[in-house]
Image (cartoon, rainbow, N blue to C red; front, side, top):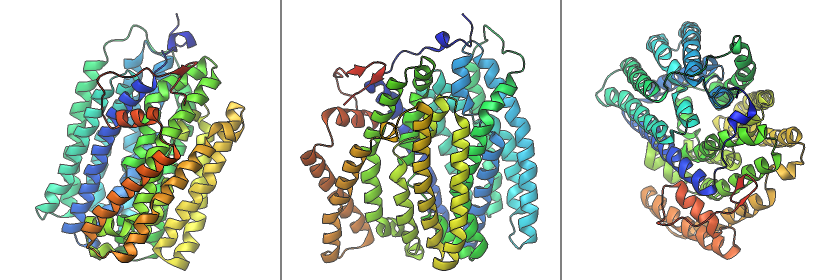
Length: 515
């Protein structure tokens, strides 16, 4: 049977229990990675002055933007082409790594140009960009390793690699900062992180990817780029959208304001991680369902995953808005209290983080839709950020991001419905989503009322508000019936809990866990 035939790609359906178990491993590793980055920011904020922290943040933001541009979507192509050419996976992974190394050279040159331009405009960051150019050459070819491991069902190894990389990154950033070294020394230490990542990635690749039984077809790169370049443009746009408000703040406001905005303008990383991780684990099955033309089961699997992720993300979103001031002060000190208002707005952006919408479009090979979605989001964000920053200051940039995400969220839902030939109501479980959102906001009422009468330190306030909200949401969830036993089991497995005997999970067609 040909490697690229649809029959060779058929993947056995995954039950809800198996999906939660696999996803829980990656969610746990992503949470560890997210917490390590948060911890690094906390330490850097406290040991560096605002000027140095602002410059280092700008350098790292630029590095992440350039490397995402240089990646050209090749890491995400792993899922699709590993399924299509299942007997030539080693060859494909090596081809991607070689291409990424060549692209890293172009990325390094772009970093050099940006460094020269910013130096000429009074920001002394060229010395930071030189080691980051070296890091790009080392790190970029290793980026696909985790997707490659997930694609061959080595989720535990992918999770372990992510934890190791996150830990070494944390050490490379924080140890020299605590030791009183300059921010330039910190960027050179990141080169050491890149070398560690290269060694571990090489070991994992040689261990899990033996020789292939077939070779890749001639001229495959044209097909790969046709798939990945639209994704690449989308990824670049998403990265720009992540940072466009920060660039506007950097351009119109002082570096000190940029430092405060950086502290406030972030989503709790583990929250969007949940949806993206569940989607990455589902990707092989989504691709299989599409190639077997089983759109009904694909939609069933997609909608049920959104319902279950909503039960985590929406209450967390409301909780974060409620405890924003306490959290910012506890993590970053009272010097950054102004950042709490920005953090509140950024927390509201989590409203759409209940699904990784691009996963469905990638699974059905509609990457150009992902591209248009990302371009529209960036353009709208930029058009709104400039006037709102001039009018409202740094919080205007956060509001622009929220509005841009909301408008284009509706756009992408409509496009998914068009691609799958169904109405938008079939694409997204609006009724269930609205019920969970209403309960999440209602659960915050006791916290808001008690805040008016209870005085406490920010540390104690963070604790009692969190506990009160969790108790309130759990109670209302039980009363309203939005949290069923199957949902509780799924969420428990998602955070790593394992019962002695797993109850049977009903399936409909190829789609697991119908409510």
